[in-house]
Image (cartoon, rainbow, N blue to C red):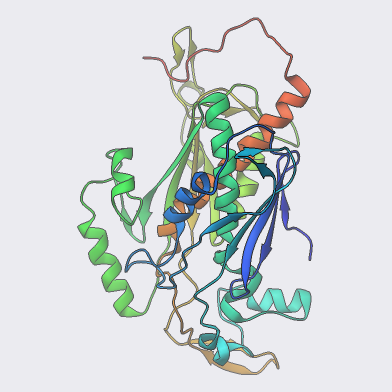
Length: 365
């Protein structure tokens, strides 16, 4: 199986299966000399970890990360960093009744047709469980970018099912299980309670942002920063759409308003989402993603088995009624991995370039 490595200079190779003994990743290309410990990584893993509220899967994995290589006396050495996360709460018997059938909305059918074999336990390689190593790698990238440029990454939920979430403050995001930017989440708790009782699931939309961005990351043609951002976000399980900046709202805007005016004091707007011509402007990267409803539900659905015969599928087990609830730290990590890779690529080609023009502020006062 190919396609398990992400990046050009800062590469991440992901390994493992949902119900295997462990999952993890190998990071290659991390600059040497950065202080790094398990604690630097564990914080983001804890934000993504399952079993943390009644609104997410009750599979209770500690997701304790182990650094196996690439760090000596608390600092990166420049050699590959191997990160391991052991699986401790698998319940494979929940999948015995669907081992010979295909769950609608899951990768089961396409996976089986492609490889001729599949691990049905928790989705195997196609499980969202494999986003944990992504978050771990993203934490390493975040740390380097924060120390080098002051870049910070954050994400919040902007819609759950039919309910929109008005943006109040980033400060609220850390205080509720929805990563919601609102102070009162009781409405969304009631919505999710009703959804769980009905045996159904829902989708979500998230906003992902990188602030403190350097100018000049990305290339003008095939290696555009926005193209790689979209590529990364579409690699997150269940993502069906990606918007950058104004996104689809650009269709109804006029050129007089969409183009982000520049002034000595900074940019007047950010419809471009921080990227123009495939290259970062120094403004905040603004990304939105749409996540489909969870495919694992207890409602009976029509399908076929591995013999091509008609069957009915009921997916038992422990599943997120809305996978978007835990997607914020994963989306942050993916954006950080893209920015990290492009930062190293920019340094390699254009590290000595001086345009003679000081960057203007990301936003005018």
